Length: 298
Length: 273
Image 1: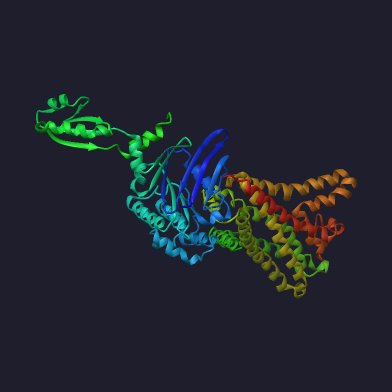
Image 2: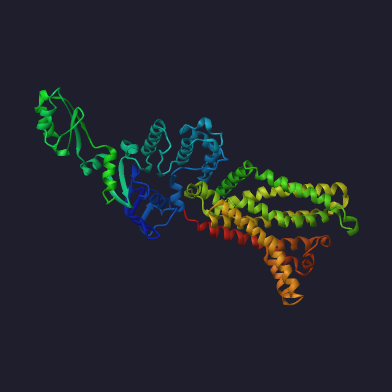
């Protein structure tokens, strides 16, 4: 399948500081890719390069089979900047109408687009009166104009409450199933978790991990946390039977590698009368993210 | 073309919402009324019709006001978008930088037209009301109108360039006022000082006419005064108007808007995000 977006070995330096270091990335039609990284990891730089807003030093970028920033590419790409801002004197409907006309579509489609992002009732109020979440929705509405091939969304869910966030991902699912490629950034893995097909982690301008959430979990190979609740007066016996375990309040906790999980469970089960309960906690999304984004000597 | 019109429509709407249209029109109406009241005295003595005299007065007024209005409209054009953070999104759309600037330019020229029509119209009506011969001055008024728009376009373009260079609206506004002061006020003073010091020498005879033509505001004044029947009613450089052919000042006021737009586009292209 042809790629909607291809970056090969893209390098960008700002006054001697490397913002992107030989970054490669591909996004196929219908694929949702999350770009994760700390502030300053290079996410926004990468997005601006894809949009053709800033030049890059080395490498190759192809957007919808055209050069980034070319008229052909801009006609096929939608962008949501971080902290989307608009002119406060215009109403939501007028602002979207303007963007529609820039894409050669009738301004009358604005009402429908605002309805889709849940701003129907505020469409005729000035954007200056909107909350941050509402401005973000105006930003989302303009990305829906004209069924773009590629959506580049810089921290799209910041400022959205959990319900709006779920609505937003439902919108993305619809766009992706219609064949749009989606690249979105976030600085929290918990925000993107199951709603994206692939996760790319950037740290200091380099891709440090890439894959599905299950891939990343496996690559990180972080230990599991096992919490054992001993039966009454059996804490000592449980501690003695499980080397490496420590007491934490009424519980006994220990960590274990993924591969040792089943043998450990078997040993705990063998303690039968001494154990009241067992909980296993897989490494959290934050743990996995920290593991990758700190690996490069941070 | 569609994209230019879309930009223009949005910018004009913003100017209307921000009361720029009202403020600039009121300002011009106010000055138009004051001028037609103050300019009523000399008509009989000169034998010119009332409107031609008014046009001469309006010319002197427009030299100051039109560039000022244009710079006020223009200073926010690029710097404001940068500060609000609306520029990256705009430039991600299939609209080129020149298209965006030209759209703004047309909208701001429309605002200026409204103000000029209101101001000049008031003055013209006042003149026609008291002097039936004043209709003879209408061609001069029309010429003043379109040449004022060209003068406005020059300072709009220069204002956009300053806006793109300075990147901050406050700095752009400051630079705009500075430019106005230098080009409109100090330039003429410097020329005057030059003539006085030179005492009829090389500067006065060879350089001075070109120095006038090189300044868009002076060229505007020359063009309107040389074409006007009432040059005698205007003070200052009116004498020079007689020695410089009309086509030269016309060429200057036609070329300056193009040069200013070119400058604005070049400056806007250099803006990095």
